[in-house]
Length: 322
Picture 1: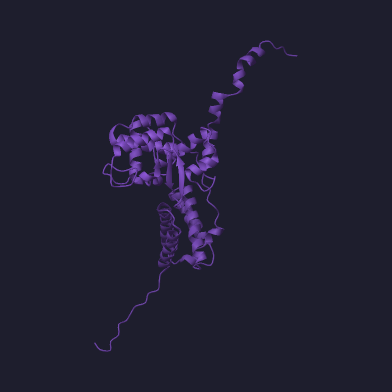
Picture 2 (picture 1 turned 90 degrees about the horizontal axis):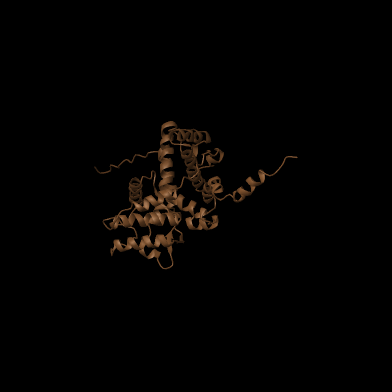
């Protein structure tokens, strides 16, 4: 009808809408910073847990109304639902989130600044024993699949690559003559050169002979010729562990094993930091703790004083008390 005007209903955003919008603003900043997909997924999972908790326990609370008490209650619930480590990671994520909101002027203060850090017990890394590695390599089998898992196992044990870094390798990233890999850092997009030894070179040559010519530039491929992804790598290693009778085999455990064997072989922490692509020595010091835990057994095998055990025992029979 002439003269009729349409009415537009204006709705006020709910606190839940405000939290969702704040999260999208945070993830937009993560994308602009070039954070790895795994890091963003890590943040999203924990922020989703926080959003659901707020909706259930404090539905009228927007981002600027979150209090330290609410955060503490959430972290206590996360500790019960997951673990102390899970609550620790949740606090770190919320701190990054509210730091961003504070810088954008979306909140007046960061409530996490008044929330105590969650103490999470750090477990010593349990690397593979050398006998377990030998069993894994012997049980690889033949053909393309056997050559692929042998190359993956040898390369990961030798270099300590992350799963995403190994899957991201291209043929052009491998210099067989120099024994070097050009590795794209999974966190931050930086590149680094990582050396590999003769065993890894031999395993790679055996795999490349089976891989043949394919249209993809990917180094490690599926049996259909597509780039191997992290899920596929985890399945391959799990199956390799089942064949060899090695439990809990996954890419990060091989990374731990590489670091530990490197230090046991005489490598230093600074070289290990560069090899693994860590920005600081904080993480690599944990590997040093593992090698320190080997000290008792190593001392039994190489005790300097035990070289003179015969002389000590002989002297005991001839001395007199005075």
